[in-house]
Length: 368
Ligand SMILES: *Cc1c(COP(=O)(O)O)cnc(C)c1O
Image (cartoon, rainbow, N blue to C red; front, side, top):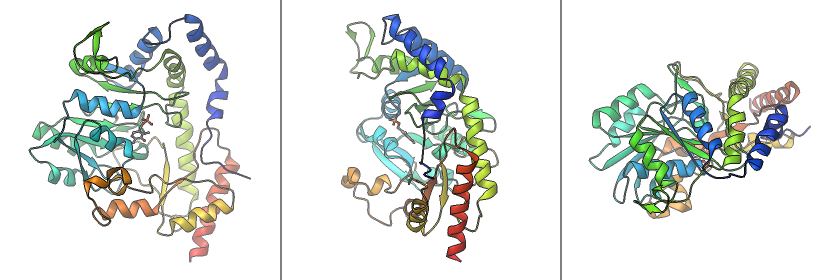
């Protein structure tokens, strides 16, 4: 039996008729960019998250770039971010000419409030909290530190749709929440898409203008913008996805619970959940110092896994110019060599879950 790392088709097939109808309606409407389908999805997603505004964009990366641009991040400005994030978070900073200031994560892979406080300087223009793998960061102290210094907080929610901290959804703690609807995300489109959410009307209007060449009124361009619009077909499909998001997340939680209850904690370090947080299981990430051997062991048994992420941004070729070296962020670097994401997808069968648990536990047995 081959168990793939991910499978996207079952989610489509489950409500195929509704997706097909939504796409065909968008095709037949004769209106493909910036129309009713987008406005309606934006309204639904803002309601779901609990913000006043949502602005649909091309991707999660664009959401980060335009969020920081709307906050005025520019050359010479510092933006604090946890070092163990996906490179897109960092590109959001550097695409605006800003300088990423990395800090080590806490034990739940989130932004560490104490390290954040130490990293603030008079050049800090924004703080990004990444709710990595689907688990919220430690929001109370983070919000307090940002507030005390008057520095805007941006949340990278690309992996955390619907995750809550003390019952409040991620995306509502900071000035701006950035979402990706990349197909593999928990709320995934059928192509690239993303959005920002905010309560700040001025920021919403600014991002709305930025996504459309910097114009609020056709052919009157007040600022230099880009082309980053979430199209009508994707918006229509995302409305269907959103309608079933709870069902999607509940199923993921069931699979994660199965792993947590059936994987031997002496075989791998299992993910732990903050007492104030709900985890939406974008990824189920275990840790083991013999990670490469574990991955090989699983692969020989037909179980595909992935590593999120093998090279931390500060050591990536993309940021060679920043001059970091191995050893600068030991916690992050150790994670990069010990994390492994197990298969977790909607439509996973009990047999598949069992095989994964058995193979991981077998590795644990072999180690001892
Ligand atoms: C996926 C992801 C992004 C980028 O989203 P895209 O839609 O692929 O551009 C940004 N940050 C994190 C943490 C992500 O997982």
